[in-house]
Length: 465
Ligand code: ARG
Image (cartoon, rainbow, N blue to C red; front, top):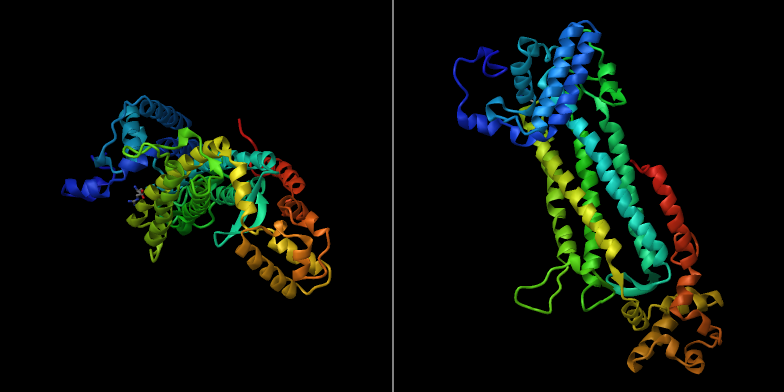
């Protein structure tokens, strides 16, 4: 074998700066385990269909296992001269087992090999992300139940709107992250299809058993077109999109935690372990973790745009451009795993400040809609009821009191149909308790939904290990 596996037709050496520019070993070495697993499956299959002898296959397989141990023991020094993980592994194998190592690449190209490796890598990593998403959903469902009665002003336009509860708010996030789980499960299903056997682009003339390789690596199916198998990276795009949605969800949560833990709101306290101080202002406790989570959205969204742009307009089949697929994927995986892990602990450990939330509720006319609904139920058209309550709010605002601070006489001054039973409607507890259609914030609802949410997780993504 020439110094480079593809060196046969070359008369001059590759320039060093070209080697450095075109090499991917610096980042694709992460896929060494997947690369070796794919090669072992390929070697097994080659002898099963009679392309190599069982002895040759045995030599290749045991050699590959030794390469794996050597890499894990830190004994293998990867080199840019060998470009990528595929050629680094193959060279090491050949050094170990001799010329028979050169038979491993029969009926295979790096083009189908790299597509398989990346799919295998995602098939290993997506379950880890799913475990974390599940863990976060568990925290939201658990807090949903314990905080089901803890009142909280709900906002629209960041203006106090109607009363809800912390529990109800947590379950909103449960819903978002459980949909993120659904998306990841779907992506995993499409990822687990084997491209091996597509060769460089046009298949191979050997009687390969592609289905055998697929099942050897734990995949469910083979890709049905050799050009597509080596060309598309839509499974990676899906991962990048799913990751982007996860980060968008995390950023909205983070923004709320930053606001709620500020002195202006004071609804929650983040535990000290999640905050840092200021080197100059001794009183400061800064919510660095949710801020950084919010900030990390940028790179994850950027990774998605990066790969979409790289793939745009590429002619079939493989082009070297596609080597740019890996770093965005690795960075997104690292970022979402780290972000989810820290969010689980942060949400679990934060404590509520129900008095501050209560004070905001009492000052916010958040029961104005309840008064309007009361009038509408007594027959007043809702638009008129809205007008009546608007006047009552303005009257209260001038006097610095709440709607429930008005006497029955004062209330009757706005509408004669108001009776003493209005005082059962106006408390925020009553407002929340009355909203018990599916999806509403009534504590009994929220507790029931929280139980169902916990149960639902098992069918979304069963607990492993
Ligand atoms: N390092 C390459 C990549 O990551 C592997 C495939 C190379 N194929 C080729 N024909 N140059 O995409």
